[in-house]
Structure formats: C-alpha cells, structure tokens
Length: 123
Image 1: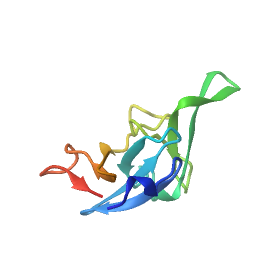
Image 2: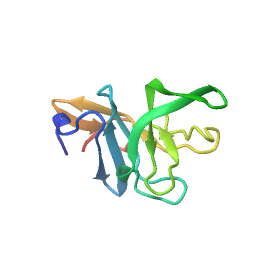
Image 3: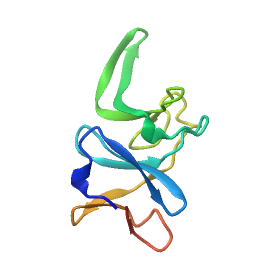
C-alpha cells in the first residue's frame, strides 16, 4: 500500500498484489495507470523501464512527441506499450499488456473493483 503523494508525475513502481506483479505509474499529467509488470517479448520488468511521450508521425522522417499519450519502454529491448490501453504501437492488434483500473481513494492508490476476484484491493 502506498500514498498517492509518493509518486510524482513521471515516476513508477512495482507492487506485488497477490501473485501478480503490477507496475503503477503516474503520467506527466498526474494520471495513474497500472499494467502488468512483464514485457510481452521476454518478460523484462517494465518497472525498470522508462516512461515517455508516444511518438507520432504523419510521414516518413516526420515524427513528433504526442501531447497526450505516453508509452512505457521495456528496459531490455525497447518494446513500447501505451500506458492507457496496454497496446504495443508497433503491433497493436497482437501485442497488448493487461491493464488494471487504478484510482486514488482517501489518499491511497487502489486497484479498481474489476481487477481482482472479490473486489477492490489497496496497494
């Protein structure tokens, strides 16, 4: 369990929730996200990766950081995952991390009611 004020925008941490490892992060806008803490490629802990803006491009060689979308980059091979959807921008139809609803209640970061059997759990 940890307080919402313990994560600044741009920070993340791994938490153990039962047998599940989850990376909880706070994007640059202050929103919280929670994803499975294992890269789909070779299982690297994504909590050791980096958080940054998604890069969009309208044409070859023309790329800009997206203003409102962020990705979590794998520390081993650079695979990227959209922090909101869990999808890998390079192959969104096939590669998707599990995401979990996350909220702040009474100053504590909590996983949402839909994520675990039996209801809500505090981290």
